Length: 310
Image (tube, rainbow, N blue to C red; front, side, top):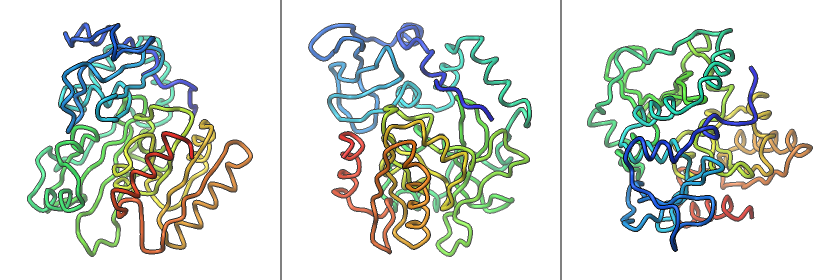
């Protein structure tokens, strides 16, 4: 599988999208830096009404000077349109035709379309709502940013939260989370045979990376969702060769794996394999901890590491 040096978001004219959707924006003023346009921040919890969200014109980076949230064109549009799927359609519409053809060539050796489980819906059960809220997450925000689906009490994916996985804004596979406390298989991925690209050949969250110079790597989906910005998940303890190759694209890699022996072993594997190509820093957590279980202050320190590089 070939990986281009550019994500196709970098070819999108964000001003054309804003014009097409009739979204007001400013090109100058005290809140707008050169090379950016300013618009209202749509991210949950932000009360911006003065165009504090900046959209970079040279790269797909977005950043709010009011609430501090950052992301890329796709995450901005998902929040603005209140729908991941609508955001994808807008991005696809504004992707150059020749670029779309290049991406299709990548997929020819595999199936052409991924199908979510037939029992999956956009309506969570009472228990799935409790599971997400019990972990301290905003259900609506996760649905907007990660396009959740939900399965009921029957079928191969029963009671699981379905997490679609996109590559160049195309659905290529999906993973799932079992909400049962006694689950023997917390994360279950779609098979390789039914995927265009399997989960273990990607880093979950790469489509939402804003700063291409630094990335934080964690194991699970909720670890990534807790840290949010410039964080990717390996979707499992073991790190594959393809995932290691993807990480060589960054100038600095920060690993924050679970504090158990398997987590420490695999964060060391990343450091040993990547140290020749890029700078690697390991954050070692206590044995009983993972990033999703950390307190607010510890999460802020990790987020600050991404912002500052230290």
